[in-house]
Length: 377
Image 1 (cartoon, one colour):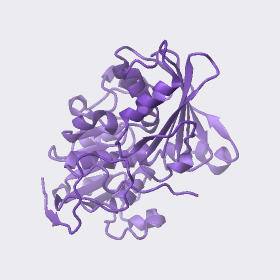
Image 2 (cartoon, rainbow, N blue to C red):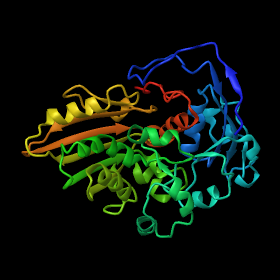
Image 3 (cartoon, helix red, strand yellow):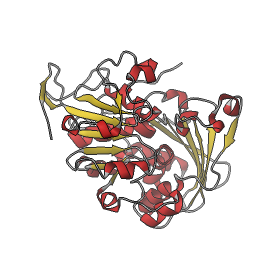
Image 4 (cartoon, rainbow, N blue to C red):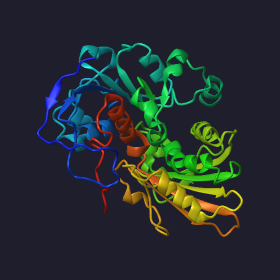
């Protein structure tokens, strides 16, 4: 793998991640340059990768692909990134020169990724933002995605990249299965609570809401302005493909099979996600104990923050950031609690977490290029 040394004038060492937001770019004195290809760069998640890596001192984008947009300048496809001048024009995947690539962000549709990744050099690090390598059981994958998995040898080496939970495994990964947006937003609060036996693994209800970018950039009738404006709607009721991914993680945390009631809703906003989750507390456990445990679990984490008692997480407070905000509230029903978590579906729910993972995979400081504050108002 190519690695060139970049000597930087700013030096700041840090023993462990801090939850204090710094506006100073921090990285090691002698650090590697990572040459990155973005497959599917003409979609929303691909564009977010380019936006975020533009601030990364150690990453250089050397290839951008878009099968239908090949030959175009990137700024012609995404005019808001016209100032990202140090990126190549779009090409087809078949035309990528892998001699100039160390890592790949794969932002392709489900199923497509399996076929593409099988053909790339084994020496390359891969962060896959599709669902192709998230589910460990091939039978579960076939049940929910309606076709057999075609790259099981790759599936065996894939590491699930919910960073705060699997950080040590991520560091040594070659193929990283980046979590989905809903699984990220729901698992970050629920996984620690189930693992600590503070909530019961039964009757978990997740009421989830997402901005329209969660449906991707492809032209679809259901995503037209008149179809989503001035209202909201549920979709994929009882059959959303993120359900088995959520249940896989929560079952691992609980030590037994967990089945959740999960309903997603499309909200008339471009980005943002909220999961409002209703849980049963274990006998004798209080709401304050749930919140205290989450606060201790994520103390010192750079991107997951448990708010002070009574403060309600808002999607607008994470817009454009890699942060997840969490809090816990009492339900009127005895023994039950309400857990609220919010993320930006394109950043912590996709490209931002992907970059967080690649930072770990490449040995860069985890927070590099990801400490942007929320865009508000």
